[in-house]
Length: 291
Image (cartoon, rainbow, N blue to C red):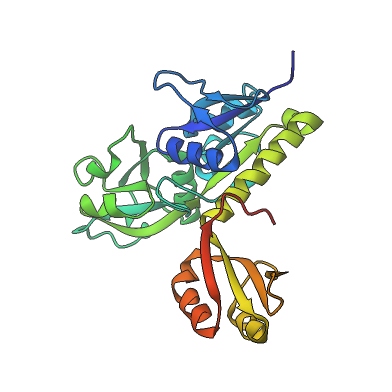
């Protein structure tokens, strides 16, 4: 029987974006809505869908070799696992998320110090208790099973809740008074996985391609033809990961210039390239960028 790397992927809010990331990295994952064992086009992988909150303990107990979860849930679980890599992406974009301390907009509470003796509702109980202790505040922290934003002011004086954009908090007339923790997706593994050369190598190769796919999300490729007499001016305004690739064309007076740039600058860069003499400019998407 061939070896398999048992990897846990987060079920829930991160599931769709995780599947998309793996697809861009080269793995097609298909999941039945009732199944916790998705199919994947790699005989060396066995995938299980696990709630991010539970991932670390299943990796620690070696039910799984490795998994993707958040730094928040690794901290909350206290599990003895190794963070192998950071993968900064969330449900709605390539960003970190925050656990924030929030209170009703009309609350007199302005800081964590004002929470002495108050009730705080959250899913992130242990981390919140540690945060309060660091601020020398004694308050009652209650576990919330969900709909945490709806609990103030009747069921709680404040909440510690996960937010990506803050829109849900604003919709529930809550204001943020502090950030308790910043979190991002991480790859975790247990010691047994790391000590197994085959599994460790397989995991590192997956991470390499996942990171390459994430980098590619923010970049595009640019190709253009440039007359040699204007090449120096083009290169002055053309940023690149290293240096652009320059290739000779059939017309010896011209060269092809190929590079990778941040997508956010393209709308201002292309007009500059055009006015400086670049011709036949092509912008194309990227699947992976490997440093």
